[in-house]
Length: 388
Ligand code: FES
Ligand SMILES: [Fe+2]
Image (cartoon, rainbow, N blue to C red; front, side):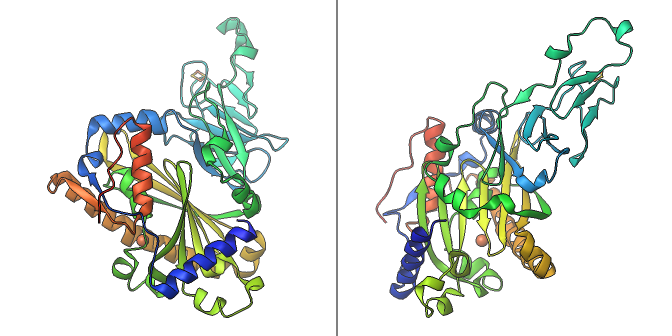
């Protein structure tokens, strides 16, 4: 985040604190609860947002060195992602070209070649077919046209993007909607992974996004946890195309603001949280970031899962590793045991179908923007802004 933007946001939240105000969406909106339960809509979401949209599959340090690999099958296309001997990030459909068997089963590791368990065709981590047993018995195979099917893959800002379709394109300028200079300024490429978490929930995937979408709940849901360290019911809010940044306010800002402006640090006084449409939350911490990825379970609108990756600057991990791991785990536990737990209770309400809509307050602009973006992409009418 650039310095001028840091100061603008810090001054904005300080002014909110002084005036007892917060961001204002200018009205309220009613969101129908059927969007969390409808199987036809869920299928449309799956095809649009998961089968046919570039996906973030992790961060640079999830492929830490040449010959590292990772696999994922979270969005309908099984992916084998590799870092080749030269350090290039590549991605392929994780399926053998002989009889279509899932090639690599491990989720992460180090390997320069991949052997299929069925008949032992082997592939390099550049996707080339390297060998087949008994070629004289099998028959003539053109090795050049029987490599792994490559997928569009881009590594930038310390994050890994893959398109689920071989013919797809990844245009980060368009996807990030103006966030490119800000993401460049963070220098996330040097971050190191120090853990993962996995939340399998009985709730629609959008409810996971919704729980990140306001600070109105801090003083109630998090009164004994996060509210000790964060000011509740105050935030800054900025949109970038389909995405947004919500800036949460740390109580440390009360001391920081007494110091000269040149010493102010955005991650000391606040916690910026980026939402990258449709399913990514990046929570920036003083040490690095937490990367949340949320996925539906196809065929069941009331089920979803989230993967969380923890990343930090290596020099900080070296010196304060235990403290950073503890603080991060406490934060992740709060999100799982408080935010996600209460979001799952919203699913119970949505399943009941009565009342038939929820209300997004004027102090919850992220929910307005997210749901209207979602509706626009799916060709639905926007939620109307109502006086309130
Ligand atoms: S299916 Fe992979 S080698 Fe036969
Ligand atoms: Fe929360």
